[in-house]
Amino acid sequence: MATSPITAAASAAPSAGAPASTSGKAAMSDAQFHQLAKIIYDRAGIHFAPAKKYVLESRLAHRLSELELEDFSQYISFLTMGPYQTDEFQEMFNRITINETSFFRNEPQLDVFEKKVLPEIIEARKSTKRLRIWSAACSTGEEPYTLAMLVHRTLGVRLPDWRIEILGTDISEKALEAASEARYTEYAMRTTNPMVRTRYFKQDGPYFILSDSIKPMVNFEILNLKDRLAAKRHGTWDVIFCRNVMIYFDDPMKKQVVNMFADQLAPDGYLFIGHSETIRPGEAPFEPMPWPQAFAYRKPLGSTKPVM
Ligand SMILES: C[S@@+](CC[C@H](N)C(=O)[O-])C[C@H]1O[C@@H](n2cnc3c(N)ncnc32)[C@H](O)[C@@H]1O
Image 1 (cartoon, helix red, strand yellow):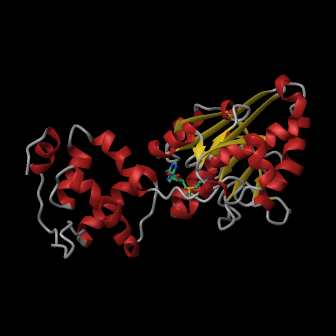
Image 2 (cartoon, rainbow, N blue to C red; image 1 turned 90 degrees about the vertical axis):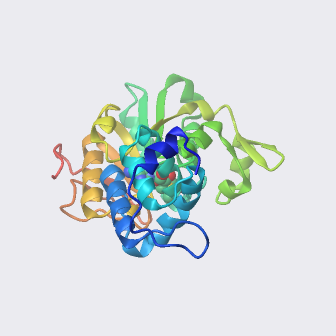
Image 3 (cartoon, rainbow, N blue to C red; image 1 turned 60 degrees about the horizontal axis):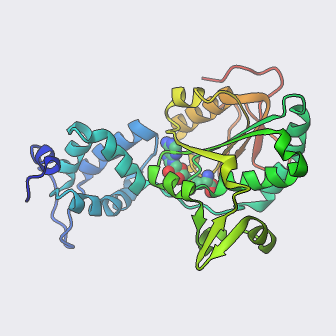
């Protein structure tokens, strides 16, 4: 094995307990899985059940080869002890997160946002003309750009009078790089109707390039939902979308995150979550809106403090 600074840092690590793999790649022992799963949970709140060992193993196998590491024990040492640990956490999250998304994902829910919530919030903010939307765990940007299109077509000619702040955040730097590029394939467009495609995209071969009327409406930033202080720095939001990420969290992490949203949401603001997610009574100061297929929540009137 070559002795690069990377491999030198890692090769000092113990490598006991690594079973041989039939594919020639390092296999992950149960002990290594538990160690890695705990590190990932502590850092990002993402819960890997033992049945998902193969996911971690297969997603990180190539990384081990790139780093010329022999087994997962060396990788764990590299991740937690070497001089490259911060970068390696980022590299690891780039590989282990599931970035599945699309434009106009779950259209009935977005209809509620467009037809009920946006007009109400626009009316409520007409004196300040400031609207703040956070797409938390936005993956490659399709969700916040979709929200920008809905704001764009709702405000229409009034748009220049408004200060619109739409922020997309995610733990994966690689996903956010793709988001900033705003160049998509047909796959990202699979839930997007032809009118929207024509109005907001320019086609360039197999790619759909997002229009300049939408792209500058959205900013992106790395943000780990476990990092409450980082979220606090952004102040109060009128609407928060956090869809299809809490399914990867366990109950304590989910509770922490939804209470953080309660903290960061304006008293009359709305939280939208994924169609297979729910906020249970008592978990956080949120009440579900009685709108079918909306998966929308609001803080009860008079509630300002999160449930801890
Ligand atoms: C399945 S995508 C959801 C994308 C989009 N919200 C949607 O519903 O189409 C889940 C995203 O959550 C991100 N993620 C996972 N754990 C996170 C954490 N602790 N903090 C921030 N983002 C996280 C992943 O990187 C991934 O991009």
